[in-house]
Image 1: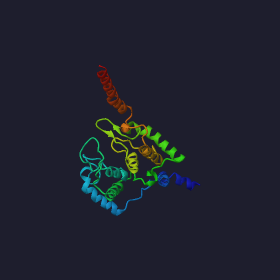
Image 2: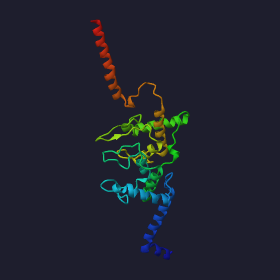
Image 3: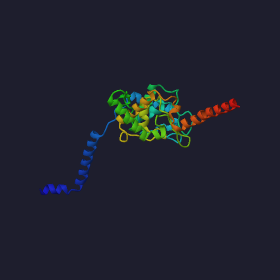
Image 4: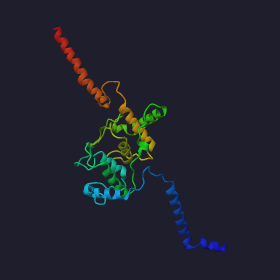
Length: 268
C-alpha cells in the first residue's frame, strides 16, 4: 500500500493520468461522432487531377494552395459540397466582379472535372460532402406519410427561408444590390448543398439546425408547389399582394376608367 501511494504522489502521475484521459476521450469521440453520408476519402488520382485543374483555373483568385487572396476567399473547410454548388450552377469561375455571383446556364467544366476539383478542395480540410440520393430524392405527394413530410417541409421553409426566397420560392430582393434567387427548376442536390454551405448572403443550415431528413422535406415541399397546377389563374410570379395590387390598379382600374369614358361619350 505504501508503494502504491508513493507512485500516486510521483510528479509524473498527474501527467500520465491526463494523457490517459485524453486518449480515452479522443477514442470515444472518434467512434461516437457522426459521419457524413459520403465523406469517404477521395481517390488519389481525382485529387491530382483536381489540383491540376485548380491551379489552371482557380488559383489566380483563391491562391495556389487555396489559402485565399485579396481577390477570393480561402477554400479551407468549405468542403466538396460548396465547390460542387458554385461550379455546377455556373457561379464559379466568376465571370465579373459584382456584389453577387449569378448562376449561369453555360457551365465551363464537365461533371467529372467539377468532381475532381471538389475532391482536391475536400482533401485540404474537412467540410460538407456532396449529399447522396438518400436525402435529395423528392418525396412524391399521395401517401399520408409523404403528405405530412411535405407539409412539415413547408413549415420549415416558411420559418427559415420565406422571408428572402418568398413563400413559393420565387425569390426576392435583398439589400445593396443582392437578391435571393428563385428556386423553381433548381435540382434537389443544389438546394441541399445551398442549405448545407450557405452561399453568399444565405445562412448555413447545418445538420444541427435542420437535419438531413428535414432538408429533404423542404426540397419536397418546393418541388410540390412547383408542380402544383395553378387553379386561380395567372400567378403573377407568386410575388404576393404587391404584384397583385399593381396588376389590379394598372389593368383593372384602367379598364374601368376606359369603360366609364366610353359610356359617357355614348350617352352624349
